[in-house]
Structures are given as C-alpha cells and as structure tokens.
Length: 274
Image 1 (tube, rainbow, N blue to C red):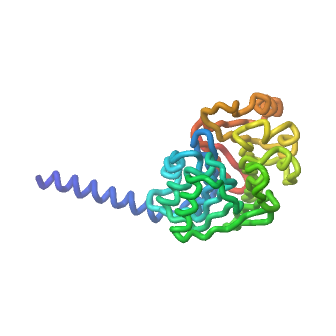
Image 2 (cartoon, one colour):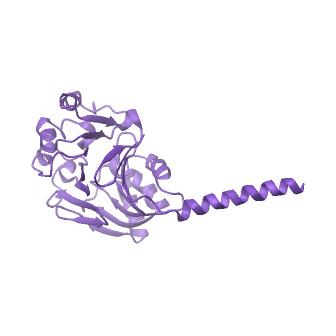
Image 3 (cartoon, rainbow, N blue to C red):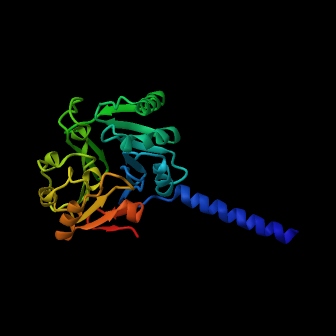
C-alpha cells in the first residue's frame, strides 16, 4: 500500500510539473497563421506570442475545435475578433466563440445581415460588453512586430453586394506578408497594390472565379495559396482558378483536403507546419 501511494504521489508530482510548464512557459516569438477547417466557410486564426486574433468564424461550431487545438486550454481570451462581412459562412461560428471566450475587441464593417442568427451574434457581443469597432480602409492594428492593415473597403455601403463590402486584410510580420481576402471580388482585389511577391494569400470566396483571375494572381504573385472550402454545390474551388494556380506553380492547399493549415514565420523565413 505504501509503495502504491509513492507511485500515486510521483504521478501527481509529474502532472503538476507538466501543468506548471504548460502555463508558465513562454510562447515562441514566431507568427502562427492557421486556416481552420470549418467546412464551406472561413476562419483564420493568427497567433503571436500571447495574442490571438480570429478572423471570421465559419458556418458552424467547428471553429471551436480549431481554437481548442491551437490556443492553450488555460487561455480563455481572444484579444480580437474580426468579421470580414456578415455572411452566415463567416459569422455563425462566432456566436459560440463569444460565448466561450472573453473577447477584447470586435472589428467589423458596420453592416448587419438582418437575419435572426446575426441578431443573436449582435446580442452576444453587446451583452458581453465587447468593444465594437467599425473597420475600413486605413484601419490598422499593431501588436509587437505584427501589423494588420485593412485595405478595403473605403466605407461599407448596404446597397452593395455583401462581398463588395468584405474586409481585405494585409498581414505583415517582418518580411512575411499575407493577404486575407475574405470574399472580396477580383475587381476590388486587382486594384490593391502591395509588395510582391507575397508569401501567402487566402484566396477570396473559397476559390471562386468571382474572386480570382489571372490578373489577381499576377498582381499578388503569392508563393502559397490557401483555399478555405468544404463540401458545396457552388463548384468551389473553381477549376479555372485551380488551373491558373497550377500554371503559375503556386503551391495550393485546401482545408477540405488537408484540414487545418498552419504556417509559421520568424519574420524572415516561413514554413508549413506538418
């Protein structure tokens, strides 16, 4: 019996040490960018040190699985949530996120979907006292060496198509640069000027031909293209877009084939986490 208690005590000691190391160990200083597999929708998680920024939440609660895998279990705060535009495949999952996590700031384009589910999200955000910020071109976020800049729209207008009002985000960390295009149409993306070649682009609208054409790819010259997509009846991703990517030898990864897609960068080099 005495020997058994020694084993139990030793096991508890090891558990306590593991928990202590998990809680108090310093996070690495790299940028982590995760395209969450949420099915036919978008959810992008940015991790930098102790800061997490979630861009969109997908069409369901699968985003919570992604957060559970990539955010430490003791960290119940997401410093910022950004909703690119109020389409259900981008905002629905955020309802569960707001209920489960403490949210620092909520950035959005200022428009409402006018649906019951979006009203639920608005009530959750308002009920938790989360600071809402209307974002547009020129809005910027700075966290250490990480820069997030909104490149579009100039100002969201309700009479426009929802995708026209989608926030387009430029993420910079040292020499690493990524465009997170939401569902913005190619006519808008093709007017955006950035330093090229880009390291990363989250293709607009799940690889739809409305969001990407030859000019788009030649304008951004991405080394890696991510397509956030699930089973759908829309033909996403479009075969023409996939052919354009192949012709340009742009490495392409899809969440419906790969699951969560994580890349990391130290500001100089970057790589895909296997």
